[in-house]
Image (cartoon, rainbow, N blue to C red; front, side, top):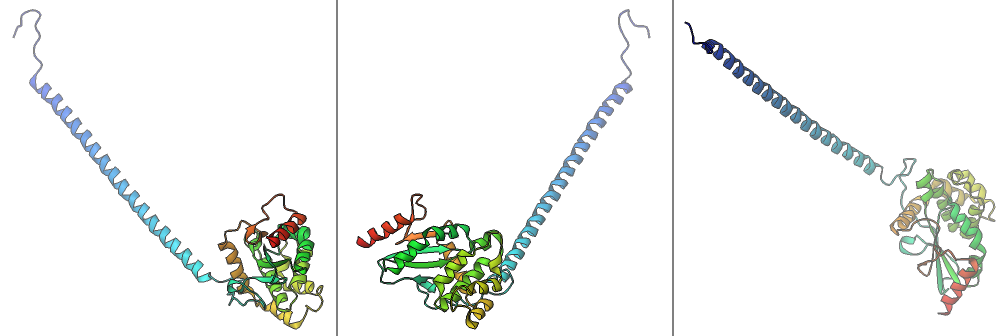
Length: 276
């Protein structure tokens, strides 16, 4: 059929239908791909949540196992042996008998000293203040309450703090605490050297104190007679919230934190307290 000039024939209808069907097919395919991708994401999220829950259960079970192990080992020392009962040394006083007293109990002032025989700062304190403390105690102006801690064992490792504290308690049983206390500090090993962990070393040093190296003292040291008491004393130190050793209290007031403290000032403080 002839058309007037300038007009075109309309495209066949089947061609338009073919294009429309292709578009619809393309859109449907895209929707299906999108739906499949969303389903895949939902499945992945479900698996991820399952892994989180599973991991949480494992962590809880692992924590429970750790707690069980800790509980099973509670009350045991590094060697795996129970610390045993808290057997206080002879003459110990205070709550639970955790204080070793030195000097006349009638003295008006009390100096409380928390110490660790492995502690270098404790040795420095002893070196500087020992003669003044002995003088004040011997003249009845001051009574000294010694309290023992084992923080170096906990910080550095080993058992020398605990073993030497037990040995000092054994010396207290023999009425030789003060001289043996001083001998331990005079022969303190370097902080990282756990020489006091050896019973033989502690017994050897007892030979420097007249009349201390006896079968009873040796048995007390080797059996760890006062190990439980030492552990309880250290717990009291921790419960007291003290920052370290030595901790020195004069009539309950922490004086060792005073940067201006000297042996002469300590003596003056004691005399003034006694007059007041």
